[in-house]
Length: 424
Image (cartoon, rainbow, N blue to C red; front, top):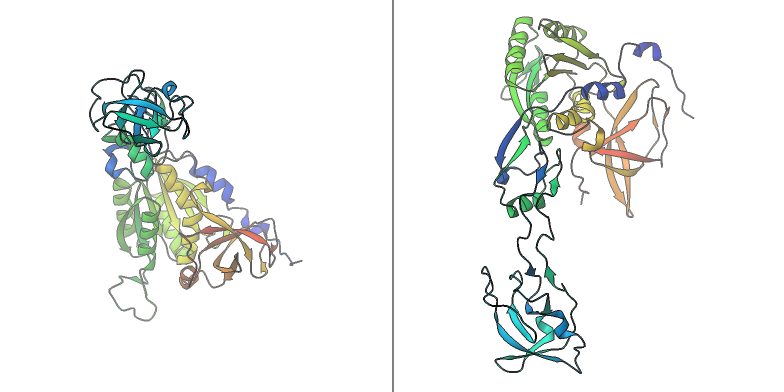
């Protein structure tokens, strides 16, 4: 068994991940907007949708064939067909002219309106024209066979979508079928992003010794887009109180939540806290989380908005974003709970033993590989400041704080960064 070093004394100020999730559940969805259904894919409904009419609005054929009275076909077979009189044809997009009475049929195409008197449709392959007026039917049909009845999809007054439903392509089609041109949804959260640090420079500049390009702003912006939010990149900010406070004040006015990607030093984190404390009504909710990487994370409430102070190391920031920010943004966008159900995951066998320090949840980056029809997770080790560990990885595996590690061959749940595609 792995050796374990208890370090509970180092975590007495930090929150557990479960406590952080519960805190984030205290923030409600943002405001609503009405948009055209053509723009509503993946959006979240802000209220239930009730059908204002039957769908379909008339009984129609689901096959090409002949509209009949079912009882006129009873006993019909290849050896003893029924002979019925052709009374006309149903024109697509128009109400039938005439009706079907005993002993008669009407030619009908898929989607055509069932004429009065008919209660079934015989498929075309079971019908043969004897002459211009006589149709031979060689198969018995039951009442309502090959018929889509009025209101079979939905009845007037039916609740077709509940509040909080995420709209899919087929849902958009249903709304179109009901004549709903616009729909009420929750607004996409606007996320203000501030990247801080005296050592951080714009990406179009060549770094001098001790400088680094601004990786975090672009990584976090792309993450927010992937999560369905609208990133607002506020640019770089030096480790200067007045400059940081000015940017934070601006983004708090314009956005629904704020991400401050800070330096890795204790002084940088202290600066972030001081800036947040300068805003009236600021409440420091989290000052450290029992996870690795990502322990030095800050979450505050200013007014009705959450402010995240993320670690400066990109891998740490992205782990925190994946575990906490992704479900939080889903909640702002209308999800009921900020839980883990917004993350895709799959099962894999671990390729090697991984040790863990007790008292915190460890999240290791893993690369997925498929062999002989089985999926394996290979740990990607590296320091939290190395973006290569994220680029090489397909997702994260959690090592619970109450365990000492994971064994080679153990089945683990891999939280995917995105769609998984096996390398050629």
